[in-house]
Image 1 (tube, rainbow, N blue to C red):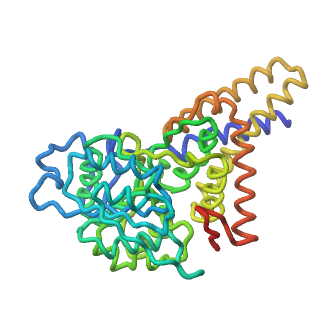
Image 2 (image 1 turned 180 degrees about the horizontal axis):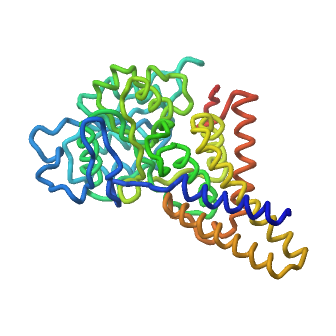
Image 3 (image 1 turned 90 degrees about the horizontal axis):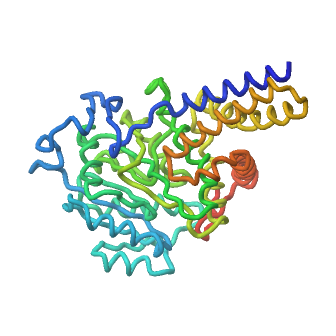
Length: 395
């Protein structure tokens, strides 16, 4: 009986893993037939002629790019270099120096950006990134605003134009956010694989049921919006205390009857998270997960839990089958492990270039995820504080 129960859990897990990321559209690689607004559908980028593109017309809206940056001298140059080669160059560039004590400001200034240094925050008033974004928006002259994290990088010369094109076909209204494709270099960085999958799945937007599940918010590293709507809703000022400002901003827009569209950045924008080392990775995901879990739809959250549980169940079933010595169940459990492993690799590689040999060792991925998730809950729900970039953030 225990074998059949474990097998049922695994089948549900694999089905959940398929459904929670059933579709993952990207302006860089895939058609956008499922993305729409109340006024008109957003067709595939490849099906539209450039001459009809809102970005190429004389009446195209002005754009301000805002980069909040705190001690980003190692990451910022890559983003600035990618902006410098864009085939759409009619933008204002603002780098908000969030109390950095490195060369962030001088690097930005040398690249021609307008540099604004934030004031020192009073404890309990603002979360750092939200204040930096708000400061940049107040100084912006563009009709559209594009918030980019300093660790992002535009992949191709037409990335900015394609991003603006999608927002133009949303009628320049609401939020368009992209989750960048995760570029990894060192082995430890591949332990972010499951987290990346869950961040995307937890947005509620990529199941077969589409808009029937309310979006959890927006992806923080790349957000495009209309400045008039931003200030009308209160923007980051209205969510000044939110640790996960990206989720909170999307919810704020939804409360104001404005659409939020989330997409994959694959082929258009990428980032390398936590290159400083394993400790940075641990702190970063700790900050994110204890807070973000409450934003996911219960049904999607149940699918995520089922999928994670399935990872442990496949290993447990294989071990028990080997102990029992049943050729049939050894074959069945080995097949279950293989199917789950292949699914994990496919889903992970849709979100980043994670090392295949690390993904093959998926039980270690699941153990690390479970330990970090429990620690995150302890920090956010019991201690009500997390550490990030030299700051203690109360939650």
